[in-house]
Amino acid sequence: MHSQWPSCYRSFLCALALCLMIAAQAAFASPRYWQDKRYIERSFYDIALKAEYAEDKVRPVIKRWASPLRVWVYSGAGEGRVQRRLLSQHLDRLGDIARLPTRLVKRRKDANVLVFFASEKELGRLMKREMPALAGQRMPLSYCMGAIRYNDRAEIVRGTVVIPVERTLAEGKLEACIVEEVTQLLGLINDSKFARHTVFSDLTDNDRLTGLDYLLIRLLYSSAIRPGMDLRQVMPRVRRQLDQWEKAGLIGKAEQIVSREFQVAAAGG
Image: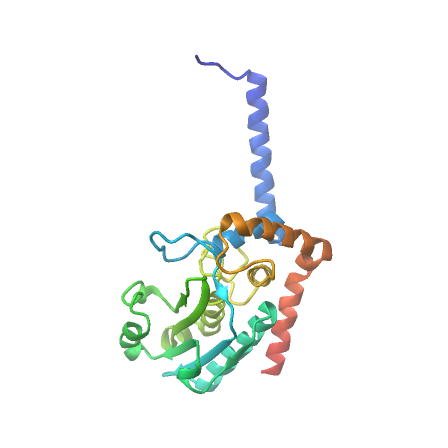
């Protein structure tokens, strides 16, 4: 049995759809669209609970560090002093936001995070040794690459970043690569096709942490969220946390906070 909508009702639905489309376009046109709680929630799901490289038969869960970051740096090209300064400044910012201790170490054996600033000639050999699963994948098109390892409790226990120095310097992307790849090591693994105004976006070109990134990091390392939580467990907690932050004014201040932290770090450098 088939039925037809009354013409007046069809007109109403068409008008409603048009209004929703206009409202959505207006929201994205606003410089503060990313402060909408639903937008932050969807961005967190997209970046923290999905993965850039799909893993067969692995249930998507929260992955994050439960121990301090001990970072060892190798410099095979470029100015090592500049590289270490940029990396150290960014680690300090991440540590402050996530409330996660970070420090540089002198010996590789003491580290749980390895950062390689590699020359072009050593890149292939280094990738095969340090990131065999990624070796040969997208390398000609990639500026920087990162990988994590985690235990059966979904706690991240090791991270590796490889930055091809000549490529990044030629495109002015050295700092951007440090920011994106090292931040992803925290557990914000996915490059999102949904989220904008973030270093994890496929749609925009943010080179430094944004207000949205600040909120996503704070969410991931909130005391209400634990490694191993799945979508059903974690999203109600994300919503409650965002409600609290909205009332406290943190969402509205996020951009100002992260900008102030960058200015302080730049002045110190």
